[in-house]
Image 1 (tube, rainbow, N blue to C red):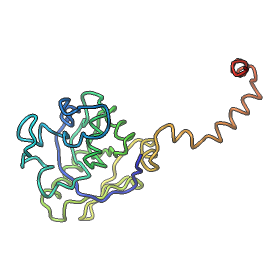
Image 2 (cartoon, rainbow, N blue to C red; image 1 turned 180 degrees about the horizontal axis):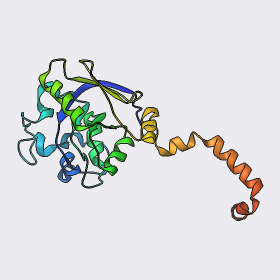
Image 3 (tube, helix red, strand yellow; image 1 turned 180 degrees about the vertical axis):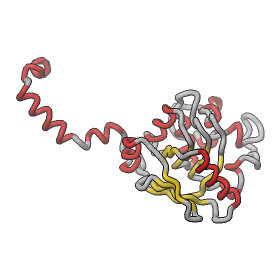
Image 4 (cartoon, rainbow, N blue to C red; image 1 turned 45 degrees about the horizontal axis):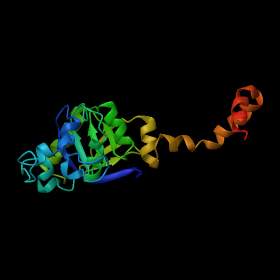
Length: 214
């Protein structure tokens, strides 16, 4: 998994509440079980003029020239609700989205983001609306900096907003590791505990030792 520390990139405003996973990647756009080939179907119901078509709707934010290189989404509460399909995060990641800033996320979607290297940063609605106003005006460009080490979102105009994220999720993203990888970083401590415990409670391990005999 690609580590996430700091990102300065174009941010797009998509301030809508309750954007569900079927909007993020409609089921008709899922043609396999892999992570590849999903970006074209991202927000298909909004990006294209017709269902199943591929003619871009120029009014949709990701089709606007100033937001076509978007890597950061600014959106509304309960983002990623609906089904638990991981394809929603896969589509976002393949498109190039590395960070999503919202007041809240659906829990399963949020976990899927972390496990696929996409940062789900929680900011109050008022802070997001303030950032969006700056982006739409274009006074200081379209870029934001998302700093996971400092847990801050910084605008080109110098504004700073502190965001929240689960402590373990933050650590996983910073080092580019999943939960198992984080546990294995404590392998020496785990093995030392087992050695001590085997001395204190040898009877607990007798069955396992018998099972290992030829």
